[in-house]
Amino acid sequence: MQVNLRSFKQRVRHHKQRLKRFLGKIEKNPPRRLDKLAEEISVEVWKEVDCLSCANCCKTMSPTFTKKDISRISDHLGMSAEEFREKWLYFDEEDGDWMNKKQPCQFLDLRSNMCAIYEVRPDDCAGFPHLTKKKMVEYIHVHQQNIAYCPATFKMVEKMMDRIG
Image (cartoon, rainbow, N blue to C red; front, side):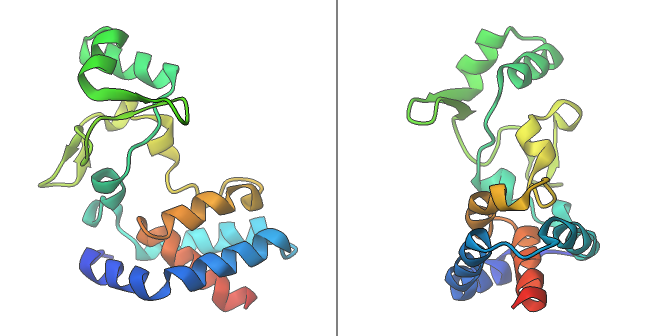
């Protein structure tokens, strides 16, 4: 299903705090079967959200690049790891992570919302938005952040609220 980013951003403005509070509540007191519920809801969410109609994550966020990511991507692009880092990345001193210098991501084709390095993309991108990580409670802080960027995360938390209360 197509994502209307304008409508999504409006919904975020109106509901983000409520959804974040809900996630905080389940982080403190996780219901039984939380991970199983997340898996069930994830299946529903992916039937309703088309990432290629959105790509908001690629437009507004930066993945962290591991050494393996940098090596794999730079090899794919025919560059040295040092050349790749120098051209595209900066080192975030605070978090100790390699990040994109700019947004949207340099590998995003804005016309198609497709990734030019999809086959070798960073692990952070491949796992995004991390809806079904085992031990969901350990990823609540990630979901709280991603509510504002990812319609799939937003929809998952809404559905979870409907079922858990």
